[in-house]
Image (cartoon, rainbow, N blue to C red; front, side, top):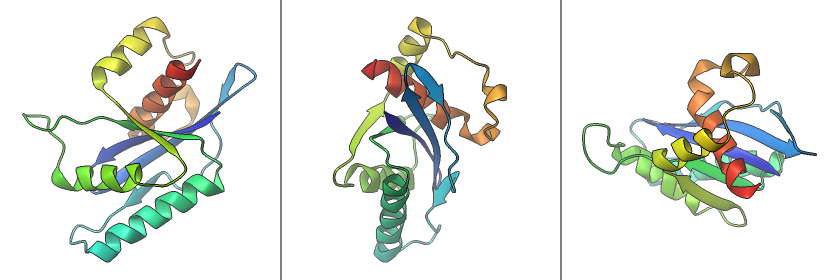
Length: 142
């Protein structure tokens, strides 16, 4: 099963693909590390974001999208734009989308720690949260 982990930060959806095949994880190459929405965006820009994200998921045959949850209020609350991005992703047809809370991630990582250090994945540092989200989503399946 191929899962796309997503972290929403500001106007960006940072992505990381993670595939589990024959009980072994691999990180497929992906043409995009993040998909962005312009700061001064219109309805058309949001539709283009959704179309680009959908096409990326179809091109890489993603079975499930896992989004790292953000707090709706408080000091570490997600911004309004990130919630728009989340809605655009959740409304993509024919792909299962889940939002994982930080407590779910911590519990899953406590039960099944990462098999390799993140530094050994060859991913960019800003993709770490997306990678962990995809890994945690796989734990919910297996």
